[in-house]
Image (cartoon, rainbow, N blue to C red; front, side):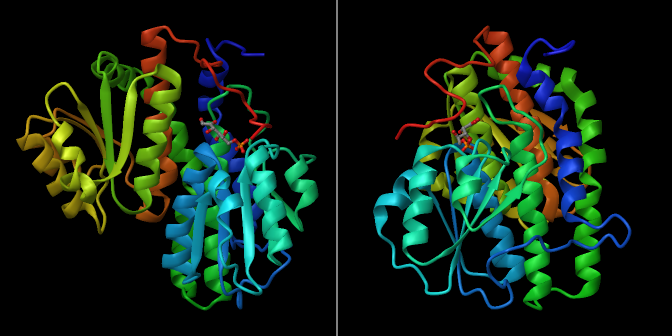
Length: 364
Ligand code: F6R
């Protein structure tokens, strides 16, 4: 049941810390604090290419994973939505591997992509939240998120659990491929292990997110901006807002703003920015300043080091815990999902069962 929560989604949002923690526990040795290698049908040290396939929010996890696999493990990585991949007939790399990411493990397009990838000679691994699902059974190996059942149609804790697994794999593959040293590996792993604690702190910020939601609930359109591995989280924020509150929203790479979307900017379009300190901070902040100069109302999610610069032009600054940029996508996913939830509650929509949507899309 929902316990004391108003909606399953609210309950499941509160399960982020435990879902992330339980999942990390499966992949990181508690004693040595070293990321282990789950059984895989390929050797990551020599893997020539990884293809990631998913739908919806899981596709956004795949996009974050691509940043990690490329930058940390120097592993050429493709990712695509399953409904496109299955019909695209891409030239698959001999000896390559594919990962299918899915909460339910039953999504029809992703099952079809799996069959296509297998037929094309790829080793296949599914990452699912349901161990006995079709995807788990039909792939060469199945990895699990330990998020527990997800009832709300909108994915929440399974999303951060998927990110947690992909982060572990990126670290492990980087080690296997010799692209990070031991100190860097220890630093990244420590950063990951701290995420459940930071996530737990975020659960206490509901009131603050609710007050941001009040500023967004009346909008017709909302823009979400970020760069790098946070760009897919901007798209996750937009996707969740669309599906839960029926407000039109788009996630954009901040650097793409001046190639079109900046034309939308006026005071009626809230601009939600994911902009923590880190290597891309200055560039993102300058894109946001351009939006502010055109009347955009900037609502920025950042950290202690990023806040002062953003306060000069942003209408709202939400300060999140300071974390290594590697894990920032996991942490930022939580407040953008909370925001969509609170906007939906304010608008009175059916939070757990948005119109026209199904929890598992088992038809094409
Ligand atoms: C968004 C959402 C959907 C699912 C998508 C894939 O909140 O829940 O976009 O992520 O339908 O479902 P799975 O992960 O079961 O393949």
